[in-house]
Image (tube, rainbow, N blue to C red; front, side, top):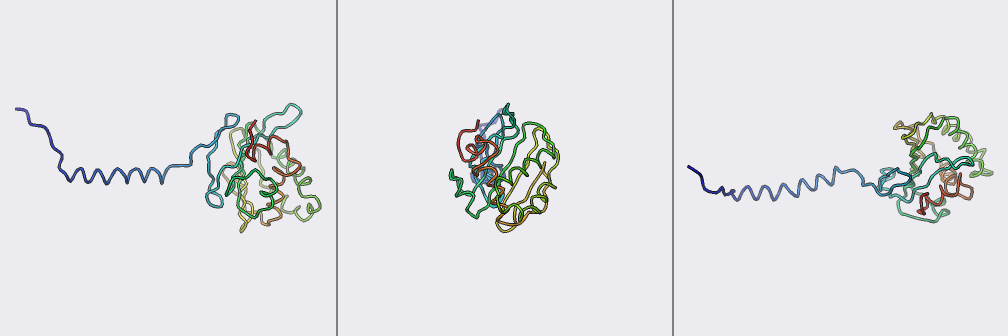
Length: 204
């Protein structure tokens, strides 16, 4: 004997109509940031949690030696997008720079790059920053291809450095944060393509 067609009880429809929006909301709440851009085969999220919900400003490639060897892709996150380097440097605001390494780099090479960078960026203020530059360099370790280093600046706390997922103590001072940002987007960046990409230009 076959039974007739099954009719759902109206209450089931009510429950389903309530469950579907709830599931959709939960998926939005727990979903991670979407991937906004890809540069040199490296995809990065469109937002960063440091200092609130920062947005991706641009991606630049750090190139080294006469052969323009690709060392890392740097992603700059700001509260609002800007292509004005001087405004970015001068504005007291949270920011984050995440380096995605494309090759192995030794701690000594990282320290040497920062020493050179701060000499160009800090000028006459270099001596007052020296202890904090040392604190930054003490946090550097050998970095492997595929790892990241993050520099997150919070005006109230300072710059927190996270190397391969491990964070150190914040390095305080607006002057330090300003000098660090100047290294990348100031008048003497490590290479022009790095600066132009971080400011929203073509990453290449």
